[in-house]
Image (cartoon, rainbow, N blue to C red; front, side, top):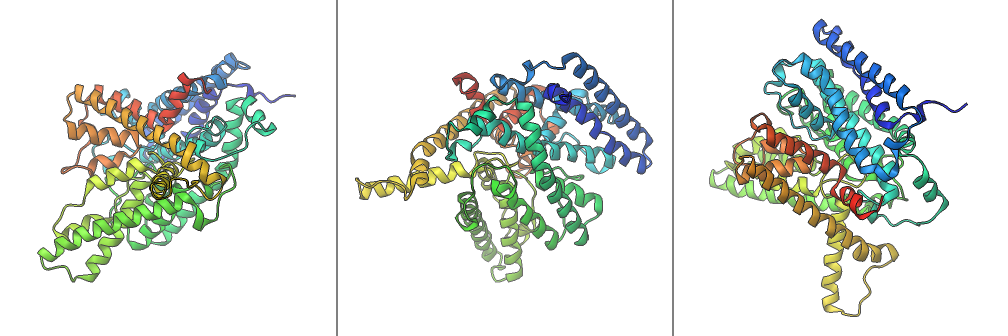
Length: 495
């Protein structure tokens, strides 16, 4: 007998799963003796599961919501509807938030952006922070599964730079299978590793002295690159905890660390994404350290080696955090101002978020593999000026990377830039200044919400954004998460 669940549309299954997961913060609220918050989550969970049951019965066997020809509409619908379901308990438990505000909060969480409209996080019940963190964590799991299950067969989302054999029976099988079935299969493969890494980081952080709830939130924030925390910033968690967070953020630099990434990965020392990330982080850290060191000599602190070491670590940690679009700021990044008297360069962090992390990871941005392809193209063109008859690339993949791959990377970078210009123009029409609109546009498109508080001369806040601008930024977050080339594929007929 054929099971019923695979015949239910994917969106309905996700609504039911969202309702079931609301029971976790409900239990947390009851344990914290916050009965009202617990009942809000319990009633919202019952409503979502009941709605999913009715829709499942009504739409059982219908495949219109799951056709591969409507992949972009399906993903867009998921990113708009699922946050609306997630917003139900948040809007009810926090009277100061309208439902539209709660919907924006959950879109930000589910797209792993981490842009929050909560003004005083410390006064919010822990169960609500847990739900925000879970939404970001689940959004990370969803994009990991969607990248390999839905985008990889279409050679989108960075997979166009991974050379594969086409026309095989396996590829044909994936192309003919329903997206819902592929997504469930890949999620089942990725979930044990994703969950295990989160629990491992949670336990290790508690060993360093971080409180259990804070450690859980930090673990989910790092593995999903959402940066969602129960307070305004990471704070002084200590060097050991920051080292653990740094080590686990490396996972967002390459698809090799999670199963089902597609293709046989190169050795670690030859991984182009890791090599590119190491080069970028090293150069940025040296630049920031040299800038602070020059400023320290003006205040006669240039020979303060402990302060120099802390500044170097703060630069490396914060650089990796924003390169992976997580957005956590090291305490030493902030404290380096005391040593040098200079404000940390927020514009550098904006550039890092634009570059982004690895292909098929939870990180946003342009992606490191595309940056690597453009770097290889630049190197090949420089060599061609000296040796005009030179054949670029040492092997077939290298030649593919500096020709077809580089053109694809350049196309995406240009489309990304044009999209950013459109978003900035729309924000200008909503009443923002040019600098403010540019920071918010980059933050939303790269899915790095904390960027707005550190990129400019003065911190910016999502709570001060008008309703029309919030709608623009919410759609920008979804577009940044799905990648613009997926949107273009809808019109180019690649689906």
